[in-house]
Image: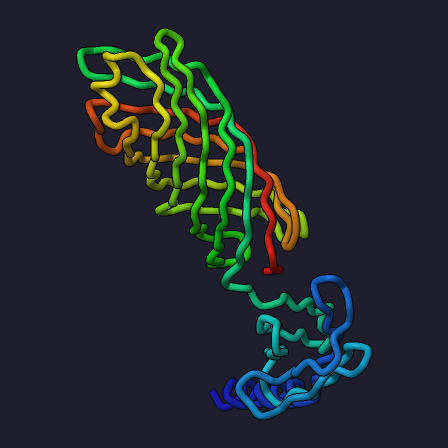
Length: 276
């Protein structure tokens, strides 16, 4: 029993002696490969630290711990486990996530409309085009996932196939929840977008015969619609991007006994004003 206890004490002393003699060495760089000077390198849990030199190198004798903490203003904190030889692979610092980004977007859609009216009358409108533009704000939860908020204005002109009716529609789309996923962490990033929201449609300039005059009161009415939209594309951290988009609108309520449904397929250019 005494021999076992003596052996354990000897091993403990050797481990402590080894830990005291280890010096952590390495280089700190940013995500572009540039060396970072003045980065704080500290031993975890004790007041033992140093700064990287002009070449991004550091040397830090360790007292008892084998974990170092690397910190610098504007960058995310990193913790690194030091091996028995003290050599640390190049440490790459990532900039802090910018929590809020903003931008604008504008696009063109191909629209397939469908109107159903009272007395089982269905209005067939010619497929048409819609132009849109708006702004958005990204709330970044991580480097790859964010929520998008904002507003987008759509404008389209419809002409009936069977009746002398022409309609100009201006609608304001406000997303309730719009999720963005950006796989990878490069300057050009692939985007997957999905969301839903509400759309307020202002319908004006109805040209119709006497029957539809009784349906479209004062040639002007509004409707609230539910919208589901998704898209894929690329965007830059700062600058132009592109989205291929699709959207479906459903009447949220019936107005003047009219039910509306729209399908949108198109694309949009985006522009982010500042970097993440």
